[in-house]
Image 1 (cartoon, rainbow, N blue to C red):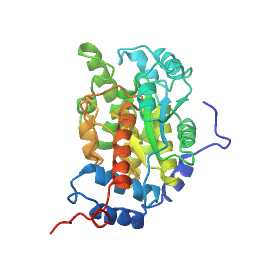
Image 2 (image 1 turned 180 degrees about the horizontal axis):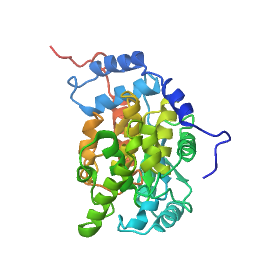
Image 3 (image 1 turned 45 degrees about the vertical axis):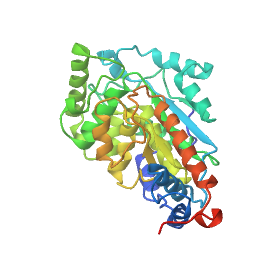
Image 4 (image 1 turned 90 degrees about the horizontal axis):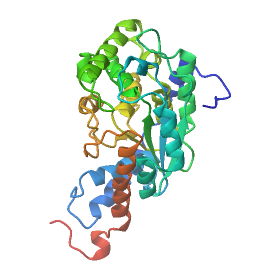
Length: 341
């Protein structure tokens, strides 16, 4: 991971969060008025109509578009893997990054299918964040710098930013984040992740509970929680979300881990994710409860739990379809079709 030129701090991040731009309601209204005149019953395209209005409001355009989607995968490494919480070893992180580069992963194919641009951001894979049952995963500087690094993903000219992650052990971090932010029991937030069950699943639950007990002093501050039990890829996702908001780029969030990272921002500001949609409901059991906490209704439900931004890339097709209908359909007045009585 190349480092930002200036050290980042949580104070700087909070200052940025205090300046988040609002939606362009004028653009949303103009799109809504045109949709009311398209040759179909009002609301008959369901969530496609909602998507068009959402794109318009956050792109600040009367004619929303989805011609330049970008898929970003942040890859991080976790010290808690040594506790046996995953079905895969830590070396898979670097191996999968090479697979992404070689074009052999699922996300490569899904990105190509939407004519998108895939970017893989390798964090400091050779230096995993700490085992959060023994101490904080990251100090403030490392966490804030990872957030700053993630902000570089939101470049000018992108129509929509699809966010995903790769990191063996990171569903354990995600579950611990959710427990810290929303309470409940460790087992409420822990799922199989890469496929663990039995004794390994119990170790995962115990690890999450130990993490919470170790870091109770951080529970009142979502950024401190992120540093204590998160990972660099989760922090980078937070940074990318914030930068996308500043750049008026709508965001599609992938599954459980990605949504858990975003929940840090939601806890800081309930409107921080207004420019985001959850792309799909993960098969990871706690994802549905997490989406409910964030007042998000996922666009797709396909039983997926891969990560890599796969669900976000798939959902781009819905955005493209929404824009195509909005752009290409005739209006009642223009087509000479009688409108509703």
